[in-house]
Amino acid sequence: MIKEQLKRTSVRNYLDKKIEKSKINKIKQVINSAPTAKNFQCFSAIFITNQKTKKKLSEINWNQKHITQAPLVILFCADNNRLDMSIPDKKDHSFEEYVWSTIDATIAATMAMDCVNELGLGCCFLGGIRFQADKIKQSLNLSGSITPVLGLCVGYPAKINPIRPKINKVYDEKYSLSKVKAEMKEYDKVMNKYYLNTFKKDTTFKKINAASIDKFDSKKNKEILKDQFKLKTI
Image (tube, rainbow, N blue to C red):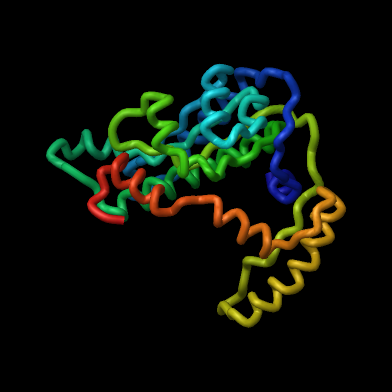
């Protein structure tokens, strides 16, 4: 598994080939075995193979073509419905409950990614899912205290991009902002070469980050979460 993890890259182009049922079942088993906070098991994963449903999901998520092209899309949701059923008189949720259910969903998604890669498949995370959570919840008729957190496109790769260089994120004993600053400076040079060679684009890690952040409306997202998850405050 370590070998697959170290050569992992996001796959956005898939072959027109169905995933074997045995492999899909393995992915489901791995997801169900994922650890959860206090064993509350506050997440759910929805396996989507229907082309019409994927098309709707793609339209909601900025028409990303890999959503319709992938034979399987897994939608990971923060889900407190089981907790609600355990405590019927509970009227709303704290932000902490949203946090742990989101972490539960993310851990399960990461385990699914590792399983997918080990099975010889490719995948790509859909990180912007939660910014369209209200539309997705309505489209899929998701009821109760559940909200989409992220998605995972899965399939047989038609094209594999070069592994994107990664900045160091691991430190021994202590953390130093000055070291992070120095690493960022060097990483921008590395990424500039990567973007030029791979995408013919003259940009940097910092510029890509700044442009991406500006696309999302955090205020809107807060209101979506408060409404969907019955949060007192956020």
